Length: 157
Image (cartoon, rainbow, N blue to C red; front, side, top):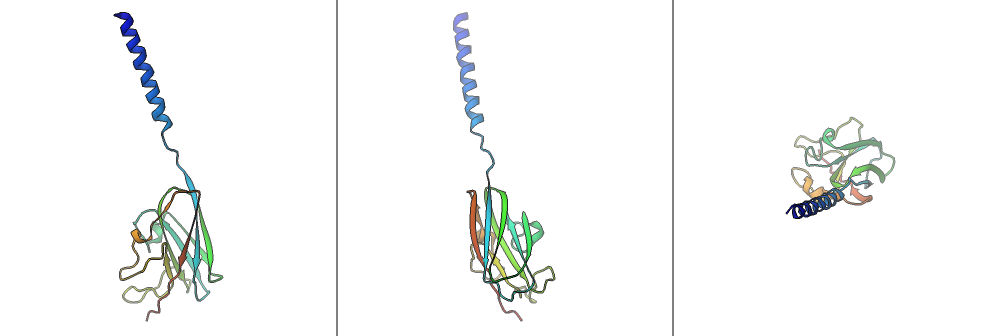
């Protein structure tokens, strides 16, 4: 009986160690990548443009302080490129504003329609209420991802 108990204990411990080892080797490690944003269609080559990267719908598209990453750059041509590096794999959306008068904000008319250029990832058709996160979201699931955002301008009085 003592021998049977010893064998049973040994088999139980060996199985437990094997299961524990299998569990610990399956823990995924965080993976990181780069998102390159190509911007097209900028008009009126003055002022600055701001590019914001969101990892949730919170603040999208216009509350830049709630973005997970943002940058501003001087407009120098109708096309430009910005790069966000060392980002964890996941879901993101990009929002761009062309601050033509360099006042640090997106100017709108009295009902909220932008007077300056805007763009969002996936280039969805934008209706009343502005672009939605779910229409602009994309997945970073590889080391390098490139997207193109076409700027849209609306003449607002």
